[in-house]
Length: 336
View 1 (cartoon, rainbow, N blue to C red):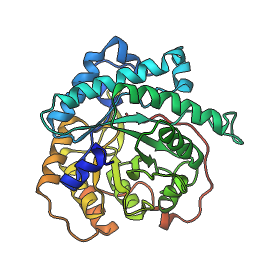
View 2 (view 1 turned 30 degrees about the vertical axis):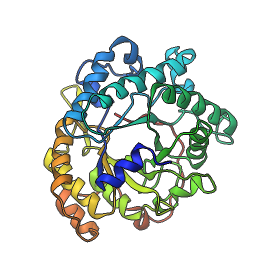
View 3 (view 1 turned 45 degrees about the horizontal axis):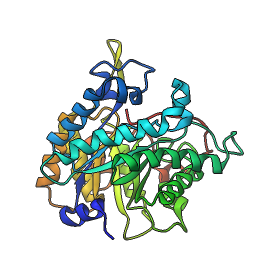
View 4 (view 1 turned 135 degrees about the vertical axis):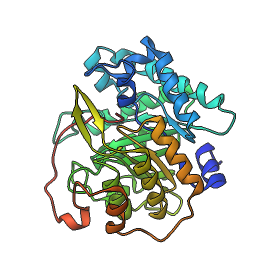
């Protein structure tokens, strides 16, 4: 049976996803090192206000404030025993805003990496990863999300573990990776191979793509190389709003609304059907992207030269131009 995301894709063709969580919450008082998920109980009004601002600026999809709400990350804040409850609250806050929008708005349940390395590089077993994701997704499902949004992934086995958990909870899912290491993920996955992490699973993801990374130009270069693995899986991109700079004690992203509008147009030309922002993307940026999507007529696929001319230079080489690179190991937090 079709669910709300596929129905909205069929109805509108191209959808606008929301922007950043962390960097927007820093603007209203979130402190460095403080987990946004802790605000679900202490400042739910500020989470709700951010969801509302994205909807007011045209978002078709909003993601719950639950990126780091798995028990391994929550343990850093002595909150692992509240995993289910925090995810349910995150989903409920987004659901309430979506339901009051007066138009269809899809709620995605944000699921980020565990923050742990899986065996044999680390101590976390595959089964433990699946269970951690299942616990989180169960809370998101109980809170009313429409789709599980697995994002900022770098390791194939962790992508698959999260997808298996979504299927165990009988939920549709989206998978996106962060291709920030010479055009590949931190663990060395090429964009054209990312979809293979869920080969053999049924159903396949509703959408496959990329988020975060190192700016809109690099995201567009990645989009040209991404393959979804199935004609039934849409291409999704959520780029950072330019490059971060440290200014007057805070982080400022270089992207302007005009640049993010150009990024949205070029993303459509590259074949993306779900387009949003990640770190640094404000509701104001999103409004410019909404206008761009609504007024753009798709053109031929852009070249790297056209991307650079419109949005700015690449920080990394595209994966196909970078050659073989050794996989790196590490841990990241995103949805900032």
